Image (cartoon, rainbow, N blue to C red; front, side, top):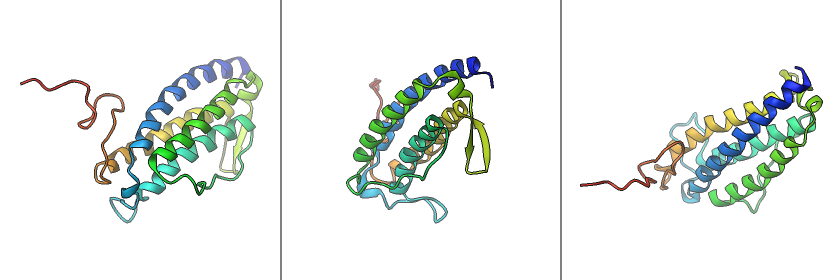
Length: 169
């Protein structure tokens, strides 16, 4: 990938990542800790594990892209227990990762980054992958929230629980 093209793609994808991160933080915060053990089937992650997976994996992908190499996935800090705390951790770490990515040169954004020998892509491609991965799992978590005892926030439009348009009649 040409560095100039990588810079343009990075600028565009970072704008999208910032917007999606706001929504992801809302969904994470809406996950009630009392329902963290909920999972719709034995094949699924429970709600608490899923919430942490969303937050930590997106940051993990972005940090790997910024560093040019992937390290060890993050363990959940002991003091991060509730959906609100996961959302706060996520917002802090996402802001740092996105700021770091915004400072990459075109050459750094274009460099190939190896993902544990499974695949290699330009660093900028991991920004899109991180966002898509988070959106995928965010959809899962949003489907868990009501059975977990919470209220689903608006995502791309109003939800039955978070609707700014009053019903008439």
